[in-house]
Image 1 (cartoon, rainbow, N blue to C red):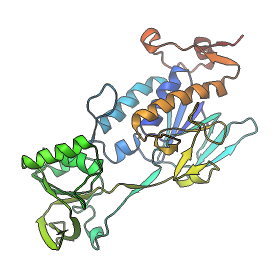
Image 2 (cartoon, rainbow, N blue to C red; image 1 turned 90 degrees about the vertical axis):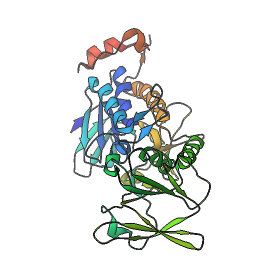
Image 3 (tube, rainbow, N blue to C red; image 1 turned 135 degrees about the vertical axis):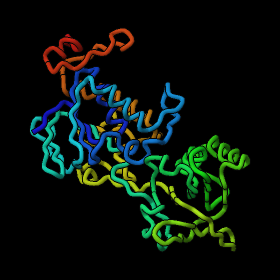
Length: 350
């Protein structure tokens, strides 16, 4: 039985930052994640993708952000159960919880923080008859390492942020980048749309709209794609085809835990602490929903911070935390002693 103060389900950026915020309150964390490595989607799907909306970082690669979050939290010595999926949750008589994974590992904590991002996910595949034949032979639904596409002819399909961002990024990597979208209008950020149009004028991106990929050709690997534009069909040489139509998220076993679910997300009370309908169970980051919710990493960081304050009250009833800014007090590592930790950060309400 693994015992901890806050059991975090999900090792994405929000879950990793929770370790730091909890550590400032001298609360110990343990993280469960079905993936073999921490980082969630940032590490598994797009580690080399630049992120532009993290405060203080004009640009940071997703994988580097994960590394920084791990470095920030390691002083508080979090525990990890990786490669296992949180399967069941049982509330105990004292209000605490036992969470058991699909491999039978049991975890006991007074507070559970679900930070599962979009949950388990599968890429949305375009309806091209022979697409499976070329999977891992030129067709990919996500980009982990852009160097794979250096000096190659790359075709990207899609009209959202991922398609735009990767077209821009690969323009300086690939021999040729072609972006295909079924509409003339894009769903991504306006500055990204303008950047793509600028690169088109410079001859660094081929832009074909409105159009769609309807076929793939090649013997042992992808060699060409068939594009339909209006009534015309074009054959384009291609070493790689990357359809970026988003992910189909699923909550998995968590959906059966008795939580209030709305549109595949967990409803929480955002007026205070992001607690679910089960006292002691919180949901933070992309996995939750509430009026005005924005699925941004920085919003997950904010939610994690407030959640940890509420968790402190559950774990230390009758105590109050005396807040000190890290710019004044610095950051002390977790020393493993609950008694000494409480002396450092709590005092009686009396």
